[in-house]
Amino acid sequence: MTTYLPLPRPGGDADTMRVQHGLLRYVREAAALGAPLPGELELTARLECSRQQLRNAMAQLEAQGIVRRRQGTVTTVDPIALRLSVRLEEQFEHTELLDRLGYHAEVEVLESRTLPLGAEIGAVMERPADTTRLAVRKRWRADGAVAMIADDTVPIPDELPAEFDPSESVFTFAARVWGEPVVWEVTTPGVVTLSGELADLFEKPEGTPVMTLEVIGIGASGNRILHSTEYHDPGIVSYSLVRTVRPPWSAL
Image (cartoon, rainbow, N blue to C red; front, side, top):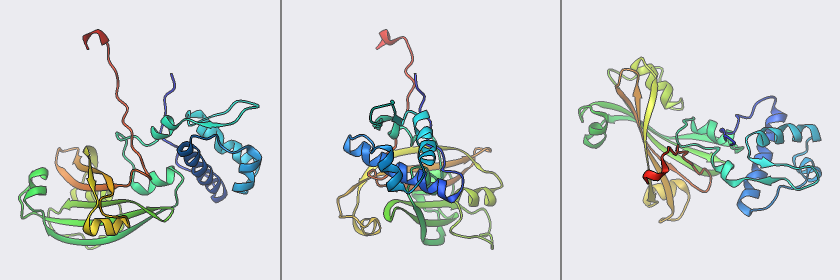
């Protein structure tokens, strides 16, 4: 039985990362078309790399079952294994996640302000509605296309730290404010259709469906110190969940 692991974070020098990113793009394209990967000579020409660089990058994907190679035959992509490369039960910063998938990732802060927590989020966070919170809206692009938007909320126990940088990770900020990191999350997936401002921010027509994730971040003390509503374009990042099947199957 093969265990599929998340795609490795591209590492090494800039040229190695360039080859890894480029190869992952061709892997995604081949999976979408149900076609084999181009041959080694064509890939080295397209990626402007050596055969050894290509083979090193290909070996990483082969070790995870993402690609299948046999001498003298074409190299194929396993679309199921590729989908499993982004696991819903594993948490990564969005920039890192897009980087792992071979995209050129960019993030921008669209809005950052302090305001009351409000009744709805306050109930979820088990805090009074008038609790001050930091609200940050960020947008991530993958190769220029909008991939994700997140509305992050961190309740503020006292005053907002003077050194706050809205571009920093919301997890880093929550840990700094509350003196403890988020150690686990409760994540609830859903689907919405884009409309109004959200459609404009995604640069997509109204009515386009996107995946949503409501995230509640919980510290080691049990305090709920982070809330996020995320919107993900499933055409760019598709999540999978692996479930363990336990016997006896006769009980079904």
